[in-house]
Length: 316
Ligand code: NAD
Ligand code: UDP
Image 1 (cartoon, rainbow, N blue to C red):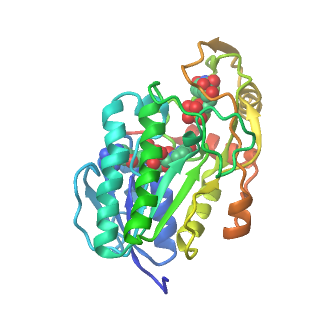
Image 2 (tube, rainbow, N blue to C red):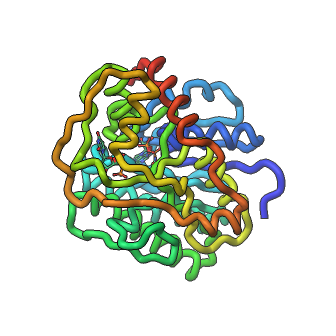
């Protein structure tokens, strides 16, 4: 049970979600140690936090052991976009698996509560809509997405085994597609691609026929969800966190073209291998256990993200 402010380690803290999480923890009075190897993270994301006496940054790769004294751990370190996680698949798998082993070891030694940023990708290309947490998924173990999907699945196994074997105080958040300011403009994810293309009046690249669906959650809602999960007692089951409102990629492109008043046209490109056809979270557990639900309408989230990209200089 946590009373008052605690010292929390955030791995992947300089990334898109990690930087928003560091902000939220600091705003709630906690001390934050941000660990990142800056593979996809950006110093610009945490620049405004430097100088805060409760904030500290360590350049470190989570595939190596780490010795710090903390009371809580959020494990977000892992490239999240297909373009980045497929660039060095072996390192992606090591980051999920060795990273989980190292951080669970740290949690075991210190007695810290530890949350894993898992993913809807553990459901693979699902037959069930929406996906509840009890669904075991349909993942290709040898495909080009496997380094990410199977790495995250193995990490979940490690989390639940540490809990059963050592009574480690775990939380597992299954995060569905999230978007917002500080997404990297070059990471190849659909929201950033479509916004950057629309703002430049360039062709919008639809992979496949664009009928595949995703459900997009705005970053503020997502951070609120994983924050609530971490600070809720004894949630020893995975919890889906996402926005249960699916949209096709064609509809998303049209929505972004309208919001940016763009002259862009749609062009169709080959669908990447193992690209899931549909994805939508069942968030009944998040609603009942965490009293959480997404509050930001997609349109408002997209407007904020468009504003961010239209002002961003993206210095790396
Ligand atoms: P991101 O790429 O912006 O952030 C990942 C961070 O981890 C980066 O700062 C990167 O430099 C760091 N990192 C990568 N490998 C590392 C290593 N070996 N050691 C230390 N740091 C390392 O991605 P994000 O969107 O912020 O995702 C954060 C977490 O949430 C990831 O674990 C991801 O799998 C998970 N997630 C994100 C989404 C999403 O839609 N954004 C969806 C599901 C799950
Ligand atoms: N996508 C697309 N055009 C792009 C980038 C992505 O049509 O320029 C599609 C992609 O094939 C997938 C969906 O958008 O079906 C979401 O892709 P993203 O990489 O953002 O997330 P993920 O596939 O991991 O859910």
